[in-house]
Image (tube, rainbow, N blue to C red):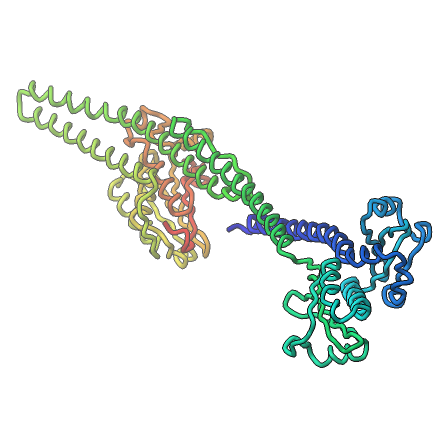
Length: 524
């Protein structure tokens, strides 16, 4: 995977993670701020309504001043907002957060405001509930205590039971607090529910079970966060898959267009996308297919043209055989037909070689071979074929030292042979094959003293079946495929072939350049 694409995906994932965390944190804080306010008003509500129902709570429960700072007075005596005052008028309990905890208020029977200050709301409300029970149960007769306890438990939304079973007793530290204060608060169980033990004046013990405290991580909150997390991830996944699907649809539409014959259709994909490499490979494949189709059309047209002449000569020769009067004339026609068949055979060999190279190349088996030995072999072979020319191979000591190169000997031999043979057809008398090898590259220049090639035609000569002068080529031989084959052979070696003008001999100069050592992962 490209580093740029990896960093882009990583940045998106990190951004999505940060967004989800921030969203969940804001949602968690927002929901729990509302839940906390609601709980801090609803949890002490039974205690406040118990006080509000009393005719004179400040006198009846005077001992609450020292524990929860019970205050009773007019609305003007308290710092409350108009909204809070309106809520109090509706009979609601109002909780106001302060620096030292919470202030909870309620309107009493006479229209006065009752206020409690809760430093630790859960513990303070639990202990206040215990004090209520101890005061009222001490005031009730023993036979009425169960009924009083039941009524108070229902009104204060708690559960109360006498501790007449030793297995229900808490630890000794809690009992020590009960003996010292007549009341003790402690928590018990995995849910953190509070318990209050009270001791009456006659020594009787009661346990009051308080409802569960505020839990910021209650299951509805967790479920909501999970749903939000799942929803965000689902949206992100949908957007990501939609982007990939759109890119794949683009590739699919281009493939359909190519199948319909629009060979020039290409995929337009920006860099850093998930399918950019697929688009690049697809475009490369489309380019190759388009080139193959173009080559095929050219080849069919050119082959049909090239085959007409030798076939026509063979047909003419066969007709002439019927009119031959002597053996010499017959042999002449037979020799002509044999030459035309040989020409057809060479043409077919050239066509097959060119087609094989154009359609993906042969299976090259590159191995270390002396290029200078191949050059000497080609020079000696061509000198025998063209004794009227001077064909020289120029190899200096430096090139001889770096002569070993990763090549396919048979095809490289064919490329050099095509160049030397082509130079020999147009040379006036001299052909030179110059080798220039170093540690990195190999270069072979084939020069002749012929008429040369106009600069405007330098690229055209490598086109299949191209001829700069049809009449001269017919006379000198060739089918217009040799140089195309040379270029394809060099392509599959990772190099290139080009033409220029020879400074030494004045004619054409064809050059082959390729890397001396091929990387292992690029060997075909």
